[in-house]
Length: 210
Image (cartoon, rainbow, N blue to C red; front, side):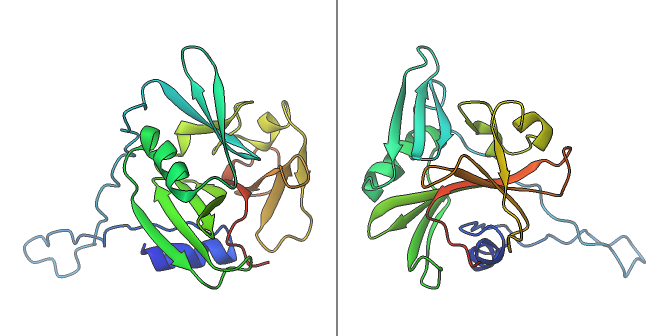
């Protein structure tokens, strides 16, 4: 899936999801077999190879991202509004080198720029950290809220620790929020029902078209 395709997906359903997948590799045809089925290459493992990956966890927050020392539990907030270079450096210190950068001039919130690290995309406007988007991709398991909610958490499990507010008639699908107001964390379930799993999480400003 190209970066352009991922941006389109972010716009209509989840958006700053910007991937760079390799094209499918063809399976060698067996002798006499003219209809060999193409097979996709293995998806690379998420990096998570930054210099602080072993000692620091990244927690999802409605105000930005929190970096938590695994030994002491001490957390520091990377707040929305921080300079782009600071935000990129902070996440790269844990996640490793970014996968790609891109720009979308047609976002509902105005022109936005993106830096992607595996499943996590940081969103920027006017050179400032404006939002984040976590997709259901390799590396998503490295992120969760302080209450343990992440990609793959079921609705029933999430409701045990937080108040889930379903957004009726959302054009994005099974959209919900954890909390309300500017500091809420938004998300999408893969389907209706208590057994449905979280398919995306986001906060701040995102490239959505509602």
